[in-house]
Amino acid sequence: MTPTSRDIRTLARLVSALAKAEEVAALSRPWRGVGEHLLGLTQEARQIALDGFLCHSGIDRASVIQAIDDFDPSGPASEDDPVISYATLADYARISSEQRWLWEGWIARGVLNVIAAEPGTGKTRFALDLARRLWFGLSWPDGQPNPWPPGTRTLWIQADRAFPEMLEAARAFGLPDEAIALGSSPDDPMGSLDLDDPETLAALSERIQAAGPVVVIIDTVMMTTSKNLCRPEDARAFFAPIMELAASSVVAFLALTHLSKDKEALGRRIVEKARVVIKMTKPDPEGQPHRRRFWVDKTAALNPPPLGVTMSDKGNDYDFTPPTEPDPNKGGRTPDKREKAVEFIRSKLAERDGRIWTELEVEWEAGGQSGKTFRRAVKDMEAAGELSTEGGPGTRKQKTLHQAGGDPETSPDFRTEPPHPMK
Image: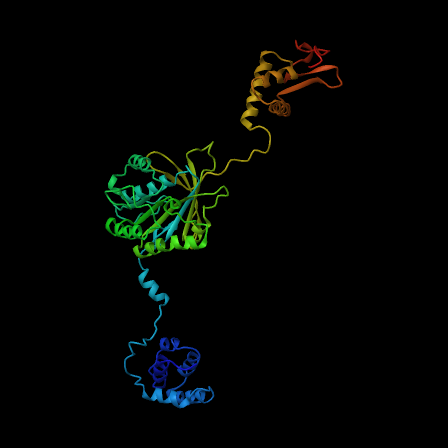
């Protein structure tokens, strides 16, 4: 509770009506409360209030008063005991006045961003398409204007070692080789992939300054570390220097990673560290193999509307009608297989009306098809009025199928007795 030399200086300045609010805020406890009280009093009342506090505090009043009297309140602060200062939001606003977004709503500058997708969905192609738009000064995928001048580079850390595929795709996109800088040296272009190494990070910082990119792609992030990114301590050790580098360079870092079977980014710690998390899926791989769904899954800002992506060899095309998963199959065969059965029955009845159900079903199954699909096709055709049935259990007649309007009595296959017990 004994006042420090900084406390004595501030109390002396308070009594002389020279102290400012930030000096009072720097007082140690309980002197901060005393200082805040004195700050609200007139100069004449401050000495009386301070004496009253000292008389009831149990502190050596005489020594404190003497120390205050000996202190020159208008003199400079001691170099050994500086007044603590602190930042406010105004200080942050001053240094963050530059544009905060690389692509507004989607990729933020100076922080870690993540795009997560299943293997083979097109993460690398998406990142190459960003590089294409930056280099040629094209608009962003959602139509927003791209504020970066043509010739803006992208820096790439190809940790998946897929250099041949990346080179081929980049050239197919029309990107010149100089559009993409690598985070490595010219004598070892496939090196510098270990982001656990402080020397690699230091060299990466220098290459960012030299190449002048606005985005750094880490493809994929799990391949740049030997740490277990599911463990909090490992994730903290790995991501902290990368996040610091992003902040100091004011460059957007975009880490590519995979989705789990539950459609979550692998390594939940990466989601904690990222400012923005983008996901990309292929909802209808059979019906729309080149279409992707693309959306922001995590952000501190408002989520932009999801996009549809059409992959092509020359670059991606985007729209605001993203694909969705097809309706789930609610049991039974898919409609196209049932329609195939319907066409089979139609053709057989067109050749000869009044076909015996079991014989026709056996012929269908001989082609590797399902009897269940055949029976459902018959029910659908009956419901549509396209065919009728005759005979069956209790009639001593084989169940036969007839075209709508056909005459059972004139059918060549109409039988009153089954020709064989198995039929």
